[in-house]
Amino acid sequence: MSYIVLDLEFNQAYDFEKNKTILLIPSCRFEIIQIGAVKLDDNFNIIDKINLYIRPNLYKEIHPYVKDITGLCEEFLQDKPFFKDAYIDFEKFLGTEEHIFCVWGNGDLKALYRNLSYYNMLKSDLILKYIDVQNLATKFLKYSKGGCIGLKTAIELLELPIKEDFHDALNDALYTAEIFKKISPTKLPLKVFNSKNVKKK
Image (cartoon, rainbow, N blue to C red; front, side, top):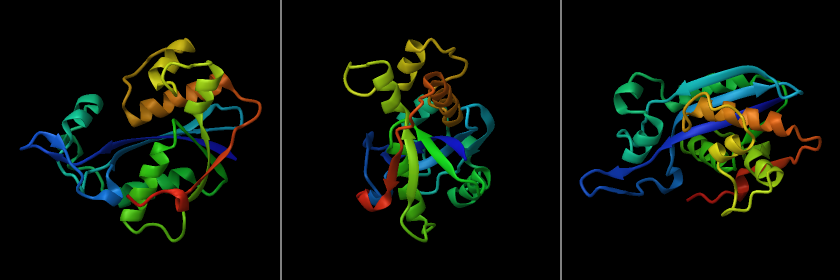
C-alpha cells in the first residue's frame, strides 16, 4: 500500500470585458490545469512524484487571480496535453497497488471528480479512501484562528523549511507530504470520498 499526496491547480471562467468571475459551466466550474502528486511508502517517505501541466480546454484564458498566484499563463500551457491524456499519465503513476489519497481539504477530490465526470471518464461512482491532512494539522497544532489552518501557516508553525513557492501543485503536494510525515499519526483518520454525495453543480 502507498499514500498518494495529491494537489491540483485550477482555472475558472472570467469575463475580461466586465472584469469579473463568471459561471459558464456549472458542472465543471474549476478546470484542472496542473496535477502534482507525491507517492509515499508506509513510513511516509517519498518514493516517487509527478508533475503534470494541462492545457485549458473549457476556459482557455487564465483567470487573472489564478495567473497571479500560480504564475501559469496561456503561452506556457498551450503545448501541454489536454486533461484526458494527462490523466492517463496520472493513472500510470498511481499504478495498480492499493493506495490512500492524502489531500489538503477535500476540494481537490471534488474538482477531480467533476473534471472526470465532464469528460465522461468515469465508468461508475468515484469512491476514494483519503486522509484530510489539513484537518489533521489543524487538530495537531490546536489551531483555532478562523477554521482550518492554511498550508503555509502549518509549514511555519511546524518549523519546516520553505524551499519552493506555494500555489504550485507539485510544491504544495511536497509540503503536504512533509507535514504528514512530521505529524506521523499512529492512527490514520481515514475518510471515504463518494461522488454520490457531491452536488452536480
